[in-house]
Length: 109
Image (cartoon, rainbow, N blue to C red):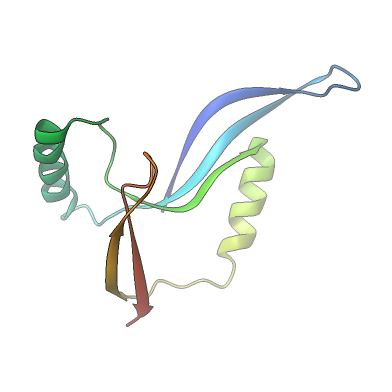
């Protein structure tokens, strides 16, 4: 799993102190041996239909604004006790807004 970040600054209205926050999301990335095939498929679709270029991934946690230490704490706590598992995709559907290209329902294999 990998995370994506973009910078932003949150201004506390009361004290006008700047607290640096970034925007984080947690991604599940495909195995290295699968990425080239997915990138080619994505490039072919983008050539035909247009759209932005981005790394193949599944967003596990959407965009949240946190300080770096908050993000590390939240991520580490969320991962405690988790183990890798296989899942079967049962259904794939297209999304209703730009950044939700598709979604899928899965079950533990």
